[in-house]
Amino acid sequence: MIALTVRRLAPTEWRSAFPIISQLRELTEEEFLRRVQRQTFSGYELVGAFDGQRIVGVMGVRPVHTLARGPHLHIDDLVVDKTCRKTGAGRALIDFADKEGRVRGMGAIFLDARQEAIPFYERLDFAFHAAPSMKKPLA
Image (cartoon, rainbow, N blue to C red; front, side, top):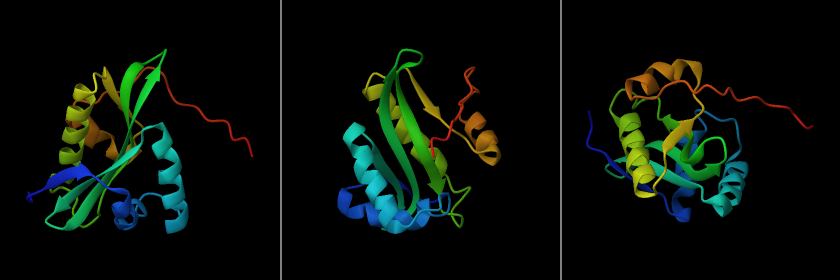
């Protein structure tokens, strides 16, 4: 384990999150910054896990209210630097989301998990949701 601090990132720090996010998403830095900026209009925030001054993990969170799921916090793109996995950074980010969801009065946390990450989330009390996500490309 390493000593971690988890906190929201200021817009001036978003660029520092890109090297971590790029380990999961194939985006240019410019497109990443544009998408984050756009998503902030609906309450999206970037959260970072830090080992001292070094950012080692990033997570996007946003409040969502739907008829099917009610009020919930949605986690987008939780990723820990490949050199820092199994250090507690992922758990620290989930703990932040858990506290944030409770403070906001949300009923649950939802996320989309990659197959290889499912055991990690299950250890943190996440369970499969009955409604599968589906996608229809429009382009």
